[in-house]
Image 1: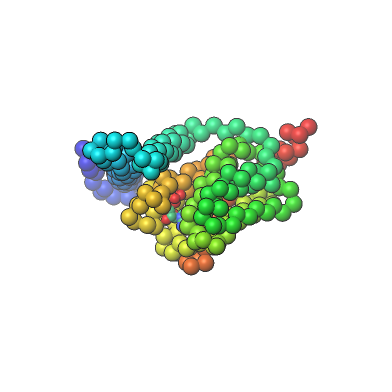
Image 2: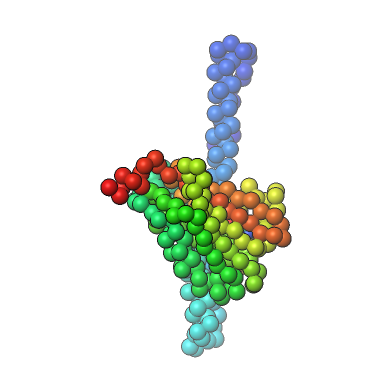
Length: 264
Ligand code: ADP
């Protein structure tokens, strides 16, 4: 239990090298175990918070409110939906970690894809007084899983809207760059500090340390979006200027001639 065994390294001969390799493996195993424990703690926290909110609301209802008012009901529903969201996201990540993510690839017209994502987020953007724009240069096309791409882009767009003050803009721009289709999701929001930028792809990591549920996603949106990009053989990266906004860049390879073949 706890620390893995170590062996003594005596020299630079074969036995010595074997011993060093063994120790490196033991250390890696320890690090993974620590990571796993931290993950389980985070998962427990993420599930406990909405659940204890639901419980709190229900207890309040039991104590006083004869007929629960609509506000209470919608709060309960919101927490329940968040709980479901976290559980779905965790499952997606577990499946992706196991290398079991199955893509249903088909020809995808990226212009249409952006329009679908924008339509799905139009209401949320309008409620936040954020302008949502889409633009595609040329008519970029892909062979990809459209459901998974909408999921990845949806996570980026909902983050962008959530972190953009009223009057701001979120834009989706798609274009062909070499053998890739590149989709930028750019916002005029708060931006992310340089030291925080690599961390936003960590599971459950948030800039707002309070983990306020009100501003809340699952804390898994970006790790999932990145996994989905990688499952397509692509990548997801971010750049940001504090006070100016952020750009998340989804890069997806276009398999050679795939579109032509699938149309034939
Ligand atoms: P969630 O949004 O559910 O907290 P994510 O994995 O989607 O989880 O994002 C992780 C964190 O990265 C967010 O909590 C937020 O602090 C930061 N972040 C993500 N997108 C943006 C953005 N467009 N602008 C500013 N901060 C962002």
